[in-house]
Image (cartoon, rainbow, N blue to C red; front, side, top):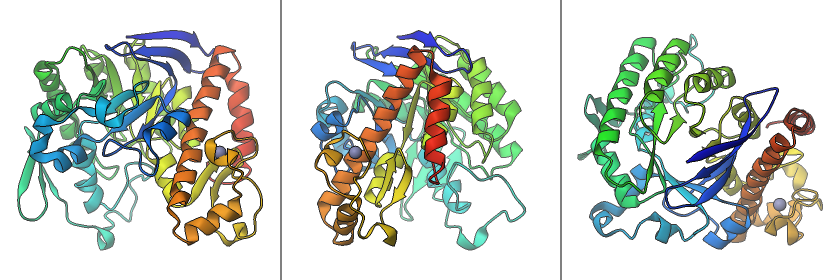
Amino acid sequence: MFCITHKDSDSRARAGVLETKSGKKLETPAYAIVGTNAEVRCIDAREAERAGTRLIIANTYHLWRELGDSLNSFEGLPARIDMPGSIIMTDSGGFQVFSFGFGREHNTGKVGILRTADFPRAAASQENLVRVTENGAFFTDGRDERFLGPEESMKIQERLGADIMFAFDECTSPWSDYEYTKKAMNRTHRWAEVCLSKKTNASQMLYGIVQGGVFSDLRAESAKFIGSLPFDGFGIGGSFGENGMGGMVAAVNDLLPEQKPRHLLGIGTVRDVFKGVDAGVDTFDCVVPTREARHGALWTRDGRIDLKKSGYVNSTEPLEMECSCEACSSRISRGELRKMFKLKDRRAGKLATIHNVFFFNNLMCKIRKAIKEGKYKEFKSEFLGIISRYGIV
Ligand SMILES: [Zn+2]
């Protein structure tokens, strides 16, 4: 169930409450912290909770491969993750169709690259490990092939037992041409219907995924089709190209049922969060807070800080002024944390992860408050005004 409580008058931004079938509630907009293998790397469940985490997304493909036959006796993600107050999502495995497939062949991530004259960047490309058929995808490791299709994805996700599941889809590369993207989108549509028909557990929610790549007409077609199906909510997946994300997501959201929640898959820098919220997105997930923390990058009110840079060697500044996360409360300085990273001290990744997770959860909290108070536009322009003075956001 989803209830929109406030709407912004200058954009599509909205605040609401998402309630799962088991009665867990989440205020939106919210950010899902990635727990690929049913844990947030570097921190434990209590630390994740204290850093404000109320939404977590685990990876169906990796859990399927890791658990193997023991999936049949798996205790379920709620017990494994041990964060009773948090809503758990599982992705569908569709992203790995891309990341092990054209993502490798085209040597690209799903965000930020428009087709240009230097396509394909063959020199750096790797072998495509995925063979996509009309029924699903075959993943190879060079020796044997494992098959994942819509029916298999639903069975696995029901065994994993998340509150919210996603329909199996094919996430295409930003380099895929119109014909291929259209073919993949039509497959995603057929798979969406299979997922709905194969779902057996009434206590889980199922989101359909809109695809269509960088092509506006395909995005519109996909939003209309997926939006017409009886899903509990909608994911917006795939690539948008470097500059098209905000406008394209807004156009997709205008075609989706207004009263159902919308999740933007795998996108979540600060600037992208604001673009998504502007476009009417309710939830996000991205590896940015956790992965970047492990590589020594902190997200702060002063922008993104790369502790690997030598300028922080003697810095006595706190990680972030006025941050009340556990890491900042320990009064560790940027210079000290840099040194811990250099010495490969395991506490470095923990402290940076706690800070980044808190930063993004706290940002969402401030965005919700601003929408509710009718001050979202002012809040956004002030926040981005300060943060962009310092570089990457
Ligand atoms: Zn902090």
